[in-house]
Length: 94
Image (cartoon, rainbow, N blue to C red):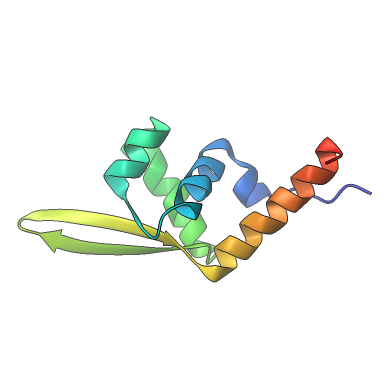
């Protein structure tokens, strides 16, 4: 029986963000923007959705006069990502 894929992670941009965050302790907004080629507005919306689900933590701080936004995956996010990959494997018969 196929497991349902987590619709929150299944979105292309949210999946890309989660995959990026899996391999680093923390990522700055500019790094995520550079790696995904998405607009700042779209990334902001998707980060808010992931944060609301408890999958990521967002930290905003000032560096000089500029704001720096950093993100990191939470334990709940890591568990949800691993469950998503396990579900995906059932679709691929792996």
